[in-house]
Amino acid sequence: MDAATASHLIFGLNPQIVATAIVVICYLILFTEKLNRAVVALLAAAVMIFSGILTQTTALKGIDFNTLALLIGMMTIVGICEKSGMFQYVAFWGAKKVRANPRGLLAVLAFVTAFFSAFLDNVTTVLLIVPVTFQITKKLKVNPYPYLILEIFSSNIGGTATLIGDPPNILIGSALNLSFMDFVKELTPVVITTMIVIVLIFDFFWGRHLKTDLKKRAEVMKIDERKAITDKGLLTKCLVVLFTVIAAFISAEHLHIANGTIAICGAAVLLLLYTWGNRHDEREAKTAEALAMVDWTTIFFFSGLFVIVYGLEETGVLTLLGQEFVKMTEGSISKTMLLIIWVSALVSSAIDNIPFVATMIPMIKSMEADLGGREAMMPVWWALSLGACFGGNGTLIGASANVIVAGLAQRHGNHISFIRFLKWSIPVMLISVAIGCAWLYIQYFE
Image (cartoon, rainbow, N blue to C red; front, side):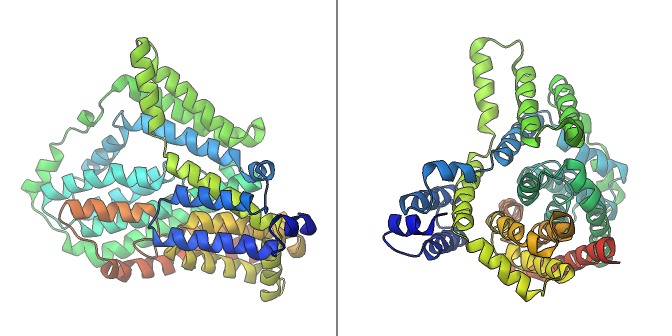
């Protein structure tokens, strides 16, 4: 931006200092969780404009509408799919496949959670899986605690596997124009490896203590998973649209269609099928209900966040930070990768990884010219994704899914304390990030 113009607009103050102050204050308020995060982000965005850092026109340039479209589209699709009962069906089906063995159930629920988290948002996944977990563990009379915390870890690890699994990946994918298959090829193998290691660790420490008798297992085997399907016709429609959308994501780089467009189109088609043949009033009511399933707080939070980060970018703050990173790592891609993955993990375990990643993206972009360009920097980008997503396992407040599971557990009389959770979360985060480091090093530097 023009420094002289900016200085005039903000009464002679240094635009970089003002932009940094706005972002720091915004993030501090977000960290306290005293106010709604969308309100905080939107107010901070407004201050960016009123201070003269940005105009309304330039602020709109900072908003990544592809990311918003992808989020809105997938939230709508998942919300309608949820009504069919397909997710609960899979959980019950998996439990019966291991003959309701508590030890086998630990692995099944973990992998089911990870799989769903690769395609749904983590909060939706745990909201669907946790009630099923309580239902099954209650019948088996086993301690639900190991199942719940492993589901927390699985949701954050599984969400790392794909473009649509976790918001940081959506941000990174949109910023770099990466395809669905780019994430699958680069991250799914390390996610599967990490899941196997973590499940084996849990089986070692908890498996032998999870015991029940044949009578209780028989009660679980009597559950008819087909009853979880509340609407077979809707299930068919959802599966067709869901598989078509995923197929389109996979083919997007060849079709030259943005992921956001695919998601919105899929949501519109499913809404059409969902309301087809209904009377006018029923159709309008069902459409409104489906659109209400979109987490509009998150959408507006992203919008505000894009604007304030763009303010940092426009004033050159992120370029300066990028230059400092280059000096710190002496221009080494491998050192930069290690620094980014560990910083991302540690920061994301303490604060929401979305604002962190949104800030890091333009900063890392500014480093590309000094470190060999986009292709050379790809291990750093994957490190950002792995660190931010795996870091969500670091503490009970590291990701929204963690807090949701703790709340659901409390309602069922199973308190998950912050300190007790740390005894498992810190080792899990350290192990998973170490696996991510090893994977990236072998892939790019061996």
